Image (cartoon, rainbow, N blue to C red; front, side, top):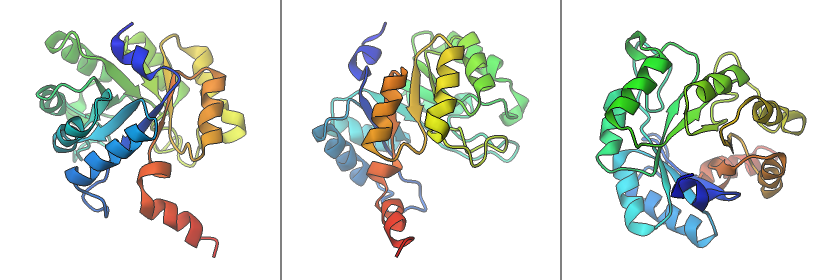
Amino acid sequence: MSDFFTRIKNGLIVSCQALENEPLHSDFIMGRMALAAQQGGALGIRSNSVKDITEIRKMVDLPIIGIIKRDYPDSKIFITATMSEIDELMEIGPDMIALDATNRVRPNGESLEQFVKSIRLKYPNVLLMADIASIEDGIEADRLAFDCISSTLHGYTEETKGCKVFANDFEFLRNLLSNVKIPVIAEGNVQTPAMAKRCLELGCYAVVVGGAITRPKQITEQFTSIM
């Protein structure tokens, strides 16, 4: 198993991201956010864009999961959707690249299997994380030999809209873990330390937390919504 997996095992990965329409959109801010995460005990970072990852690399020595979010007119997939994003990320070489591994139509009609084969052919040593939404997505990602699976998109696709990773004592994660052999990393609305702990107790390899740590606007809204 690679050094990446050794370093993140049973730990917290903090997602440091802010899109252009969000208040904290800035590579400088994301770099400092990652530094704060490292000082707080995080074992890894997940980040979006070459610019942000480059800045984060200056600030921390943690393993980084890289993505590029980009919209395409012919597909709802926007997390590292094409080889163009893979090429951009490989110029800076994150420790792992995450990509949308759902069964939705991909840009240019490319299948997930074709995309993964193309990546492996061009970059045989890259570690790939499958961002999935359903158990079926996870089983397919396992078959395609992704290095790990993340529950990132559960609740965000049309077929899973409104679903929560932690519903019914994390029923989705328990089912996913029982159906795949590769490591499962929990991600998606993990809002408290107790939730993160429960993910690990169930057998998840690590836990990614984003909004509950790095999105103060979202955190503020949770308070103001009940006042």
